[in-house]
Amino acid sequence: MYLLTRIKDYLDKENVSYQHVVHRTAYTAQEVAAEEHIPGKLMAKAVVVKTDGRYVMAVLPATAKVDLAALQASLGAQEVRLATEFEFTGLFPDCEVGAMPPFGNLYGLPVCVDESLSRDPEIVFNAGTHQDTIRMKYEDFARLARPQILGFSLSRVA
Image (cartoon, rainbow, N blue to C red; front, side, top):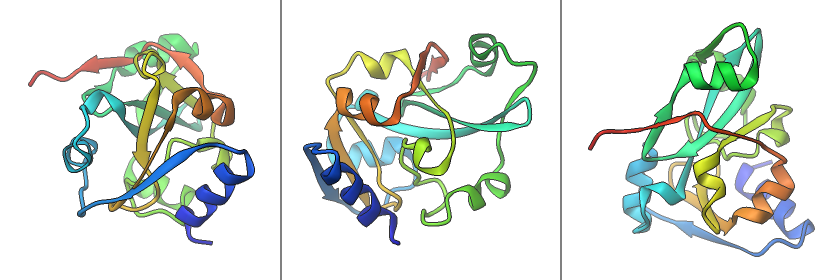
């Protein structure tokens, strides 16, 4: 099933209010934020890391990058590294590479969210393609994804 349909069905079943927006093709989270005319801190990007032999989805603002040392310490892991596209592509068979939504739970992955995202009332994210986004209340996202909230982002220097 096409992921966008699956996400919409999931959110509808859970009685979650959301907006689906279609925009011009954008490959980075910052480009998506620009297309959506929203601050980059509201645009969530999902990054796949490999920690102690398992995959974890780390979700953070478009304006930040993963602090691997902080994530490793927060998870109490021996090793944390970014997963390669080759490694994670098969984990999300219904998504375009790099456009997976922050619902790792739909793919059997634990989800970690940077605490900075949890402070905003809304979250915007890719919905499986480089043209589709979903905007919804952060509290609804947290209820459904059940993320572990940790501090693991570094702000990018503009």
